[in-house]
Image 1 (cartoon, rainbow, N blue to C red):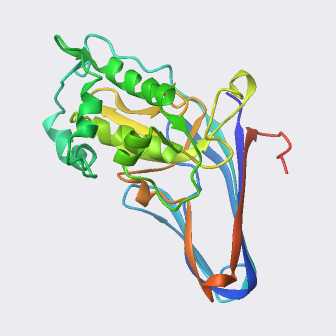
Image 2 (cartoon, one colour):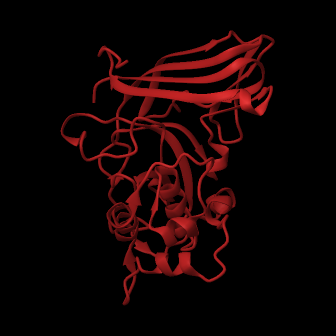
Length: 296
């Protein structure tokens, strides 16, 4: 795959100058053996009084900006060039300990995986559990890949994707009952279903590279994207995108991995002023092969 450049610009507009509180920015791609950040630039207008970088509890890069100027606009522009080398397609062999479900995690790993296995959202009537159990074969052990692939493609094929402008991620039961949601909603739903089977799963925020013959088959692009990572013994963390039916990291560029979607907000901050001063927010995102002209 060619080098990719990610352009991400967010602009907040106000009817009159306001003061800005602390802003936390989680837009820098997350380095790994399959993704290397070659260049990164973060531009903020008005210029922050301080800008510092930290690694959060999950090891994600977070920029923290504070301000002393008032303004009627706040613009955050992030540009990253990455070398994206997805590994070979995911597959388990009969020799892998997780080839069949149920499987056991190693004693040394289970301590670190418990928070990714324990369900985080209520399921009082067992509806999520019942949906998850449909992925299992009625007789005998089920190949683990069949469970993961079945959920990934099942959500894509049976649920209706819709962009939501409401704040946050909806409860997994709402996604199940309405049969619809955004990419963040799909990811959280699949995570909670897997956790009810005792499979470790976590939330991933990032970008989707839409190109070529797949340009008309993908949804969830043009904004930040979200998907799932599942941990399997000997295989490690593997990506699954239930919005687009992607298995593995092909066309997916990670910026953050967290236990819960509320911990992976790409840009979050406050302003000090009247509530009616806020006019709106404009976001433009473009992921292109490096060297291509960014779209306006």
